[in-house]
Image 1 (cartoon, rainbow, N blue to C red):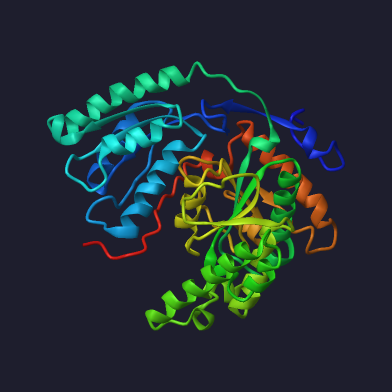
Image 2: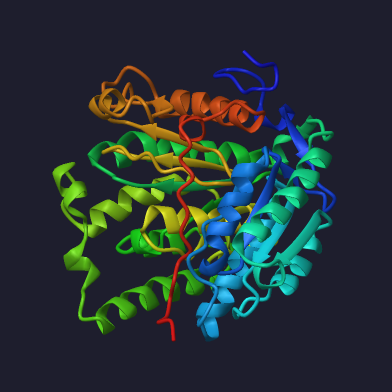
Length: 400
């Protein structure tokens, strides 16, 4: 076993390190990508071509960025900046068409405030998409060559930012995989790290229990207001989430009500106090456990976590899902032995031994913590090795 990984019954996590990439702003990455970021859907194809031509580059297939207004525009901009500033990104190349709402130079300047090398170009100034792809590939390759000289070095576990997510939940999720993920969250926070729990829709019915763990009464009220606003948005569309959830897959997996689903989902947050409630794609201001406002749609939620600074994601699933993300490794965990076999191409950790009474949640949590550290140190997850780079930005208003 890697000497930097945690092992069941081994040293306390506070003594652990992992090999990571030190960034100019003091944060630590677990991957070393050049992010090719299109400011709008009009630049997405050019960005994809550039990333395909230059080794070490990853494109973000942004479908928004134009004709958005108000809070919706600000959220897309905040998300793209957060993704560019994520510590797993060593450098960024911003690609704009030249006439969209989000300006490439503005976005590049905001990302550059993190201290990393950032460049930008406009398709309309290059002669079109073919010329932009060629010029972009030249610039991206230069950034990638510079990054390739950077070496991993021992970094404290406290520098990790964990995003916890669930998708395709079933009855085993709340009994095994979610508590194991929560155990990992607690271990990381005990070591001085940061954990972010998302999916507002999956607090419904359990929000009062989460509010009791808030660090202050103001944070508790913020959490309760967040859930209430989510329900009101649903009712405004003549949909009652308490009647339309759980999903068909959840029901087939043995979950009967949204409250039952939420009571299982919140186990992913462990037992630590909740320091604050974040907007979608907002970065935590400190260490500890944070709540992020995000939808129950897995891809959009994970994108928000990574834009908020998550460098590694632990994703629990009962039914099985292949979801990954372009910039952060996603460790997939299930508590369902049948799913572990049926989705073996995509599941990294099987904790169904908890259901069979053969292993404790704590033992599985320590094993998952060790897996997280190995992943942070460079080992590919199954989602990464299979090229799963699903991407979506949470949209909150109509496009005009």
